[in-house]
Image 1 (cartoon, one colour):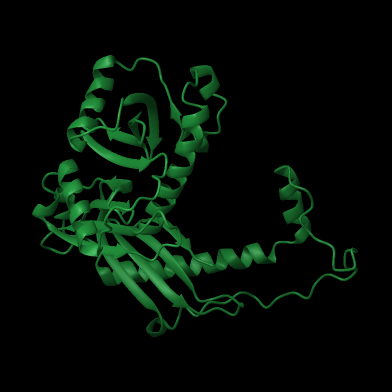
Image 2 (cartoon, helix red, strand yellow):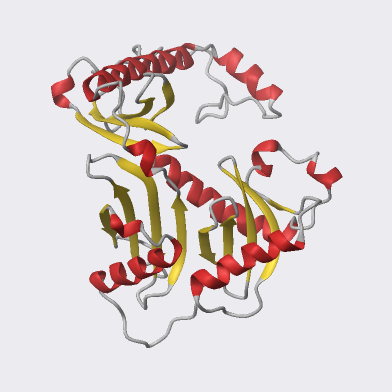
Length: 332
């Protein structure tokens, strides 16, 4: 879930900036010609949105922040992870509001502030600023236990602290409320995004035990290994045909001499990963609500392979009541 969220964060940030500039006034006809994957993240203005709804979202932004940075203007609607959120901007930030839950779900700075000589903050002050902000959005967030993780190892000078807050219940299950806030060294929030959860679902007792979920995760990891093998064994000609279908030139490359080799390259040994030696792996299992389902999130790390890579890892999410695999991925 964490990997997925950070992908969403990065992709959302980039595309929001692009489409805010160029595509906020799409007509319904133009929308029909937009790639569905891109449309999932762009800001567009559908017909039939009432002024009352627009003003309701605007008031949520104002009431949450207690202050504004200028004239806040409605930009349109953005579909994010199967939810349609209203988008607003002032001269500093872009805001997304979920009208179903009545919450501000994301905010990011549009123009990085100029450096200043004001007093800088430390880690504890950063946590306090972030906590106070979250309380404005979710009043009862800290009525539960909360895991807090702070990252201040950023290469970009405009980012000093990244703080993650994950709410969990007395049973140790995460409710699905998950907040990320980034700020600069002067305590200004430059990015905020939240996932909303369901504490009632988090109270459910999973029908699939942690041990069973880990077994399922290993089974899925072995399937992914088989898929890697199949991809590697695909003939180059077949790969090139697929590339041509996508409008890409021949992906095989000539050697240093500028000529294609007369003999095919030596075939690599079939891919292997030591998934049978579980005691050598780092395995974590987290029970959490995501998309209104109680799920096991299993991470299998430090898996050695016979390739000249660093050890790879596998991420698998499993329905905690049915055992169905909901999502899976691997690093490389």
